[in-house]
Image 1 (tube, rainbow, N blue to C red):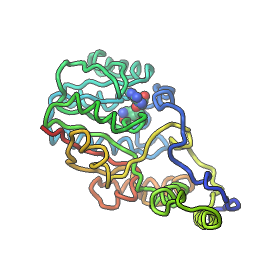
Image 2 (spheres, rainbow, N blue to C red):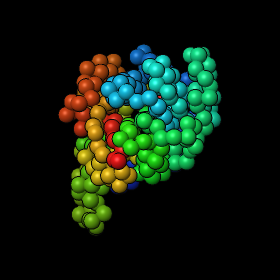
Image 3 (tube, rainbow, N blue to C red):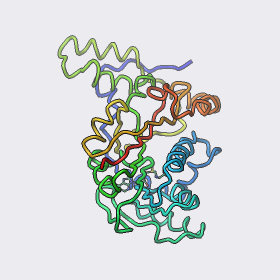
Image 4 (tube, protein in one colour):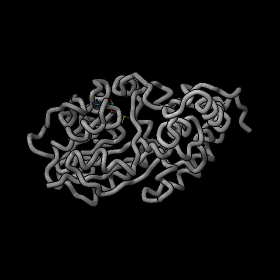
Length: 304
Ligand SMILES: C[S@@+](CC[C@H](N)C(=O)[O-])C[C@H]1O[C@@H](n2cnc3c(N)ncnc32)[C@H](O)[C@@H]1O
């Protein structure tokens, strides 16, 4: 089974969120030429992008918007999918390399390269000069410095009753990941370490160190936090009050993806089995998603 290294006795060892400093558009921009691999079922990594895109496609085909804006469009696989489905779609990204990759993809798929432009999630120019029927953000809005500001800026460019649909990282997955994220979440939100001092604080740290020891496992890849990319986690139970209502949106639905049928460390030790079992779990409305899916999609509607 897993070997462990001696217990850590320092709270900093558990802190998993809010520490990273690299900007996402710079980090992902370096992958522009290969980013499309994320949409393959056999690229040697879990196909969460495939499941995410499927949720967006299903929501849009029920809504039937005419105009769609893809905010943080990356190398353009979702944008081309939207155009191929008949939407009057545009996309933008802050990474010059991602925009260039999208332009190439558009040209290869016989779509106009003017469908993509460079822009920042918190400040961009609306390319059609009128509000969109729907704005989507696939794996993008939680990379800015303040997600609520980003949602407000996007919502300004959507028509009344229009849709704002975006994915987020699920903070409640920390309860089932059974690793440093669990300790970090519990010590911040449930058993606040800030409220303790002296002997009790040391006991609390030792208590968590015993339950969440560092495992000696050779990891197959690094996640965004291990890559030092700045991003945020969000709680699906509070997202309506924190991100939607203050920005003039109503919650229309939540959909989970990137399910974990085994604790995440098993992805590094039993990769194939992890993929098979987790793929079977990819039912976006399954209640288990609340705690065992690492991401979720928020479907919101702009209030009149
Ligand atoms: C994880 S990738 C997802 C790409 C694409 N949406 C997809 O699903 O294939 C995140 C994207 O968000 C972009 N991004 C990050 N911060 C941004 C910002 N402030 N403004 C615009 N784009 C940003 C990155 O450059 C990157 O292309």
